[in-house]
Image 1: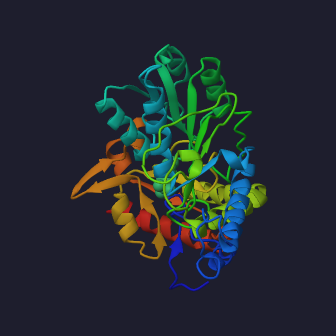
Image 2: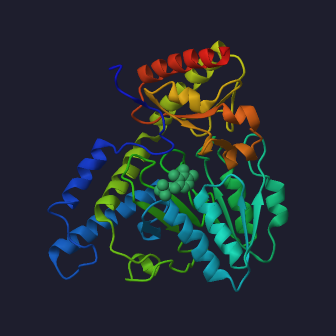
Length: 385
Ligand SMILES: *Cc1c(COP(=O)(O)O)cnc(C)c1O
């Protein structure tokens, strides 16, 4: 392994495009460039067929059908469409929405906008591991509740919620359940029927597909989910999302979904072993180290580490050959712990010393060994000062 190469350990932020995915996309930039809505000619019909095939591949990963899949520009748009689209369609029925404190900003922002429009939003607390307060959820659901929106796996600390239990509760009350599966789709098993999921957001670039493509699963029966389109224009995507389809992106997402589900078991096993290795090395060689959330075992490959006596930004700056991220948003000189870390009680000095390691499909054990060695050396150096 070349010592000059940067070791990429930020796979929860984004993943590289799998070479097979890129290969599958290329023809759709070149000879197969037609509009998927152009039924009047053969090139258009061919592209349409390829898009429908991609739809089927994506649906298959979550036990759904192709027709249930709406293409968007990414999980952010899918989430906005799910939350605002459902809220605006069902507002006559009620104006109450439930979510949690550790959601992605796309969820929190959509809910804030609805709150400004007169919707009532409740934010569930989480415990130290990042698991939502289920009893509280049960108590909060009322006759006005139209939607529960929660994430499957957290992007910072990797916590995985008990979706079966939550889905069951929502369905038994006739409340729609939206799942932000940006981190888990293609990585953890999902079955929208068994888990009673009504809407589910997917991102291309978190599963070795391209950026700028995503999908929203929208249940068509038992119950049929309706939503109000958030963009006006053509009648694409069951009239739920206007705009010419991003065909190369869709083909890439389809291929990425297919590869992910084929490799799911092996890949997660590899990532678990790597995570275990880093955890035990850090624990055995360092003082004042702890792990946040699901303890690195739930969303394989994701590890949130807190180290006492260091500033994680200094650690990352001191390790220019490692690409990782801190657990804090840097607002100028001031260090603000992220809303997720705050929610699980990681504060002050510990929040300052928090960083995230995100391993993925392309990560090798040799890279993990190098990275771990460097991280330990640098932390020891910083703790000594
Ligand atoms: C990345 C991510 C999103 C946003 O996805 P984009 O496709 O980048 O818009 C939403 N939720 C979670 C949990 C994520 O990790």
